[in-house]
Image (spheres, rainbow, N blue to C red):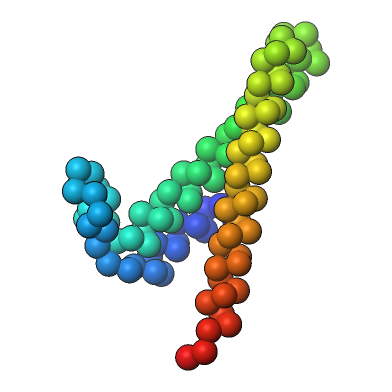
Length: 103
């Protein structure tokens, strides 16, 4: 499901991103592609944090990890998940707003 986010850039090429000339890769990439890449990277990062927290919890059960390390990993994963949920909600809200527009 997450791998499908990359297709968003190919579907919605909105033009050149000329706000920041110091980054040539973003200045030449279409805005939709840069946005989809950012979303894909964020989703990948969130999934890896969730997997890391799960692995740290398993290590704690096995007696190989400190409680503080587990709490830090779980809290970081929780924050990332909450941010991902908030972004998803904003995207769904924006999609519903656009779908209600009169043509």
